[in-house]
Each structure stands twice: as structure tokens, then as C-alpha cells.
Image (tube, rainbow, N blue to C red; front, side):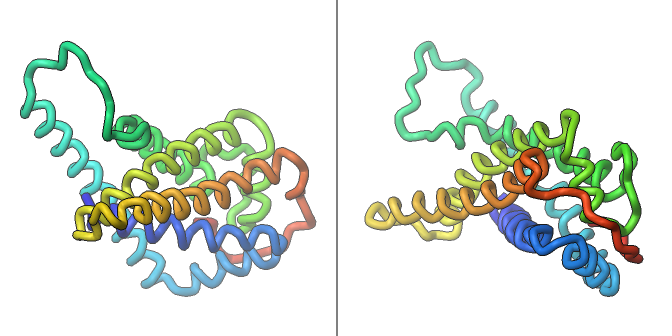
Length: 213
């Protein structure tokens, strides 16, 4: 769980940083997609690593859930959450939302099968037109909020798993987990919000040879 979570965490951060190039205009974002397509070994290697990591992460989550359920067959008569956070108690739900979002995201902006005006190679157009109306932007916002909760507890738990845990430094762990989750969520939330508010608009499209990620 910790190792695959670290892989997915790293990808989410890099993916968000790359997508921020949308604010530089269509030429910059489309050129970024072309560069990725010009490195097929790296691109498909990362995709393969992500696919394996997601599968193992889901398997680990299911395994831990079964173990926890088997450890106590009878539920609590009264339950008070003293140490756990809301993020930790909703990890299963945020995980399910993110899994559904990954499938939708691939169909929407990578394959274009559920995109009403998908143009292969024009990443800027696909993002702006895809997040302009309908339920898509709201689903993206919901998924990013779920990502924030998932990352917050995941990063905190990861540091504990690898031994970075001490009562003296626990506040720093919480602070770091909250900071990195907030940066990623705000960065990703800015895309649908910028489209819906008109900050990002359609521009004359440039021809590119790369398909969007």
C-alpha cells in the first residue's frame, strides 16, 4: 500500500505540474503533449507502472479491509472517533470515487470516447471544451476533493509506515500532508474553475501529432 501509494503520489504531482502549462496557452500545452509522444518508451513505461501500481493499490486496500473486518466480527455498540480523522475514515469512499474518476478521465480526455468534440492532438481544446459544460466539471471537482482527502491521510500514513513517526514531529507530518494535498487539489481544481469562469477560453487551434494523455 505504501510503495504503490508513493508511486501514485509522485505521478499526481508531476501530472498536475505538467497540466499547469495550459495557462501558457494552447501552443505550450500541445507542444508538451508532443514531447511526451516523442518518448514512447518512457510514456508507455510510466503507463505500465501506473497500471500495475493502481491494481496493487486496490488489491492492498481490499486485503486490509478484509483483515480489519475479520479482526472484529461484531460491531461496536457505541463508537467514538477520538484519534482518527475524517480523511482516514473515508479512505474507502474516496478511493472508489478516484477509481471511477480514473476510468472516466481516460475515456474523456485520453481516448475521447465520451468527449462530445474530441480532437486528437489538440489537448488545449479537449480540456477547455470538455470542462466547459455538463456534469464533467462538477465530477472533476468532486474527484479532486476526494483526492485531497485521500492524499492527506495517505501521505501521513506513508510517512508513518516508513518510520518517520515521533510524537515530537507528528505536527510536522500533519502539516506536510495537508500542504502537499492542498497544493495538488488547488492546482487541479483551478482547471475546471478557470474554464467555467471564462479565464481559459477556446483559441485558434494548432495542429499537433500527439494524442492527449
